[in-house]
Length: 153
Image (cartoon, rainbow, N blue to C red; front, top):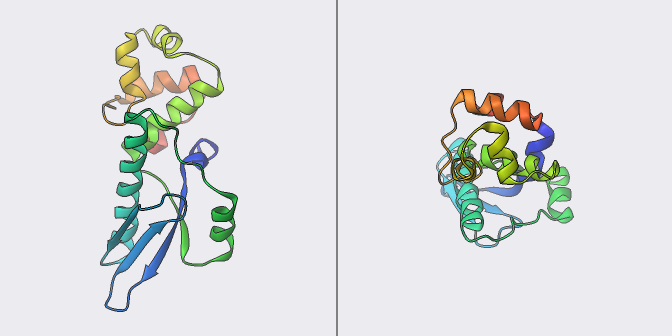
């Protein structure tokens, strides 16, 4: 599961503010900023902001933002730069879509293997409409040979 997730972890800089709280800015997502009164709140808000950016890209049929090598180096070398994952309801569809593409399967292929309509399958790859049951996630795991359920808990 970790291998599949790593493509969707974005580096963000967490800055402790003088007046209290934390501000967060994503190194590779210009204009994607948030804040929180505590580090935990700022991290949660960063996950939500990242999910919003990703969902917007998917909705507008844009490629997902690339993660730069410079940003990965910043994670290694700067204590205030952390990797941030999108929220679970965004991450699961991304992992499903990414793995399907790795296996060179079409959405039509997946729909047939899962015995659902192509439209129903498309919703499984769309964070805005994702509503998979545990049973459906188990079926997807078998077809794609991927571990999703720890993410769903």
